[in-house]
Length: 337
Ligand code: 8YV
Image: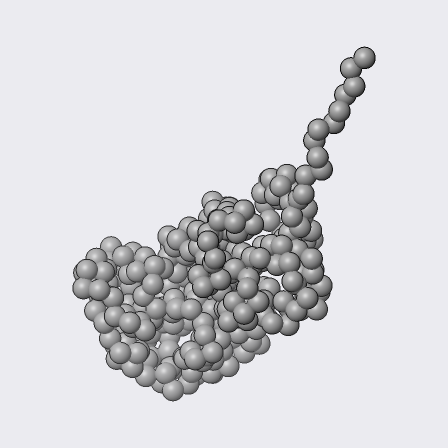
């Protein structure tokens, strides 16, 4: 008589949290290796809900909408990694995450070109008043066409672009600007190497000089408490009345109330914003402005790039839970490999 012995011991599947909806195939793949608690309904957790959801999990995939700090981490004793589906990580209190011995990761590189494309698209739409023109057509105003009565814009070609924040995405925007014959100036915490400046044909300027001379000012820098409202009424007053201001970085860099006032008072020509203070809320005074292009934080939003961001975040999470160093570890001091 042959006795069938089931030699397959129950496999331990680490518990993970997927805090926002992700692509179904990616979720299915995760479910093969992990006990997944997912939030495919995509309702953003309150801080208290997030804190509860983190109890007992070993890894968490989160996005910019999830603030990870000492309070949300309290009780999350099993947590080894928080993997952000985002390159910016101002939603992370990194010292608190590090103090908890948790690895923090983000998704650099995979979104650089897509975000730079969008930064340029937003700049073009703003300078050439594309959304305003569309409203003009939809409102049946085309019969008012005249040489002087169209929505008249500002040129990009052969103008000066001032990029504040000259990391990977800023340099990507600079390279795009070169093909428009634009003069590129930039401001950054630290100057680029001579080689990188040459590759972008970019000239370093102080923030004040950049604001005074640029025809188009583009913000592409990370948000920190130190640069909160780095563009307010005083800085806008330095800008040319014909200038545009573009933000594809983070809400909070611009004082939105001051910007609305400046746009309404014609202090600058126009603004293009992909990010807002307190988003998804938009300052009501900004909504009243016609000389603004508004987008709902979509700079990285192409199918290919969002998939690549999710894949990289999963790669980071898997590596951490397999005892390997995640490819984009933010707080290297936690790594004990
Ligand atoms: C994300 C972003 O869409 O990567 C970033 O820093 O701002 C965007 O690509 C957003 O943060 C969602 O997590």
